Image (tube, rainbow, N blue to C red; front, top):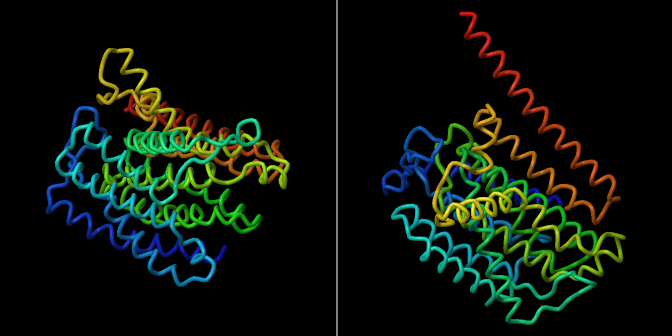
Length: 368
């Protein structure tokens, strides 16, 4: 665990230090997010946060390759994830600067998924009725579709300062906890790559968040959202589509469906927001990728919460889904569910406190 903590720390420090330089580069290059009708930010803000994350990841990989335990996680799959992430990053950088059309971005995302397939990152089986082996062509299709859905889900949820960064950090932490227990405690060698990747993603998010939280000095942009989406989706595929679920549950008396449920519960908030947006727009007769102000964070803000508190509430809701599922395979299910209930209770308290503060502020204004 100490080596993975060192990995998180190194990634966080490098990302924190390198982000201001990337911010200046984005401004000079014209990669700046202007204010649109659907946006919440009030001033033009540089993008290209994904470049800072990618540079930090590359440097971190070079450094931690010399750590004895972490070095075992390097292999064909980790190489494929890095190369696919590099491709999707450059696609995002171009989009942040020149605003690519959706078809071009979808095609690029599919190519990134194809790179993963070349390096063996693919859904091989699903834990349904024991273990169901997926035909190679179906597994390849499911892999690419899942990668594209997660990438766009992260992109959709990136609507408030620090929101997507924090949500991805929580998702990565949940995946890391699950994969670390499999790789180190239970000896599942295939869980090594997702342990490494998610540890680095946690560090990237923690290092980037001080620059990205309200008021944001830089946005991650599509470069960052697509890069993080690919990292998380690839880790999920390696972890839940290639690890034998029956062996996990045999040792831990867990539910065989947990590995299948893990990606969907850990990513519940981004996936829910993505699905709601697609359905909402199609029902209105609009393009599923036409922008609006009806995302989950917009609706919470209309309840009277500030940007900061809306972000915190969505952090808590992400953890409410992610934490119980990530730990349920290793502890009694009732305790895992209790943790989710407690996290939800904290989110309710935050919402109530925000509303009470709003009422007090209105009364104070009236008395003046």
